[in-house]
Image 1 (cartoon, rainbow, N blue to C red):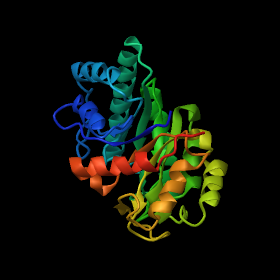
Image 2: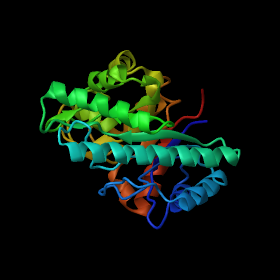
Image 3: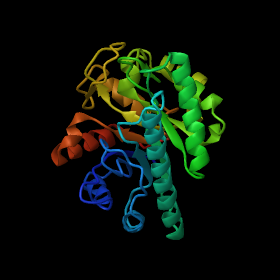
Image 4: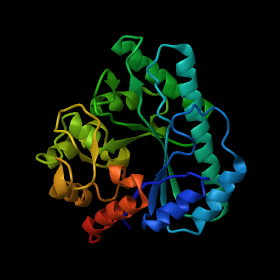
Length: 292
């Protein structure tokens, strides 16, 4: 089975993610369990999680990624911002663990892949100190949330971002105390903007991913085209086939034998409307081959 899907809204309650996913025929989803622009430090309502698990178990969904809030920055020296970032990720890991437990009790084969987030940006520390701060933060979070995986996502590279190079997120995992609980999410647009040329050097990009991150550690791919050129360092997603990676480039990514087993999740601009979501997901399903 191929795991192909999209970021879906949970507006009105977690259970609505299932309805939104089934409306576009996605068997894999990414969600924001809480409002992405607000700090999350309290446990997510258990009754909602239970109802979500029950709806999932009756659906065709097989893989789930939760995306951390946008405020997270583990590179910060500011103690309050750093602590809020850590606590938010602990809350999300506990959500993922609770959801996994309910799914297990329901004898479901759905897998909660982990919590995806960007490590952060250098603001009030040196780059070296910021990297150390991220690694310390990862260790603290995993010590305080005994289950689940953190998924480091690569960035587009604008500003003083940490993680725009595969070597940087690889270092974070390598130096963490529990590397087996850390995976990666590779975003095709972010990496393209950071100089990884998916269009003209697909084999080279995949080789680079394997040598730095390890393909077995890539838990999910965010599948996006790019409005900006390779190496632009600008985070500007485009709909599939409408950007500078292009239709043939995106199709080659989707169907590459070394990538096809990895869940692929859409994050393109079209997802802002139900019609756009259906259209974008149809492209993904139409372009994906199912033969071995």
